[in-house]
Image (cartoon, one colour):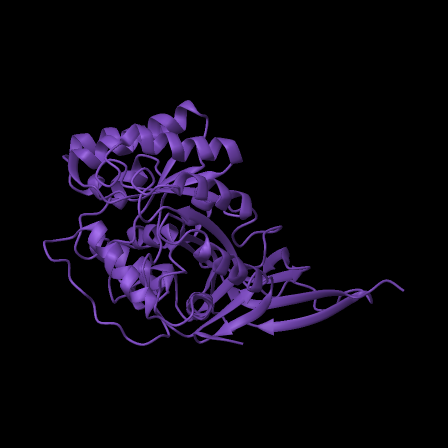
Length: 406
């Protein structure tokens, strides 16, 4: 006798377009979407059928946490007071504070688990985490986070970026460590402020893109430099991306410089980035200029988001909630109209999925049944209200409710 096929019908679901539907899930994927009440409630004898009444709740795709640091968060650990930089924001000084704090922190595996469960509980089932790989820590951080990824593989999809937190050229041996990190399982190669940190844009990008080409990996570069210096590096990254045929596989994280250049320069930058297929990640930080989300989206650029740091050495904020992040992106961008609020939501869902190259994403037949139910009338209300009463489903099975793992 053939084994029973598990099938679940989620009845009385409300989609983002306002339609009421029944969602049928089999083998972890949506296999049918029909108007509410039009789905047969009895399957063939070979079907092990369950019915879940969603009661008219809003159903949305699981959120995409596009930029986070699983190895450096202190979430769930002892509170660590923030240490301000002595002469304004300085990456090198913050890295030194981080090393001091990490030496006294709880075991990394424990802290990574806390952060993962925080994010899953809030509805993120896909994630890109940057992990320190450089001369100061070697591959120790990566080995711990690789183990955490394996432990949680059935709950969340995690991409790892080999991140040279102490630079590449200025940290001897880092290029070789990054090469090894990609062999061990990192999905992307990272970078850090080629001009201001390593003070050699060409040399830094030669390593980053050289390793990407060698391993067939994507690229996601931290870029904090502002103004024309930041813009120049964005231009260099876009040019390399296009020349190497890597459109759709490169992202620039933060890109503060795009937020403090004239409107005409921004327009040209948007057209350039769209043409090169380079995505931009912003977490809408509170004390920095950040990439103008609406203008870049209008130019055709994929703009996505992430929590970035959560209660770590860079700042004490962060809640691991990408719906809350959509709210922040909208608030700081001056988004008020429904279509603008929907755009902020797209930044943490479909745009994030495009940036991460996720396949089979969304509420659609054939897509993985990774979704979140929210008590809200529609997406704009969800972005504004950030309701916490949510249930998170991974491949059609509930894995978290009201912020807690089940």
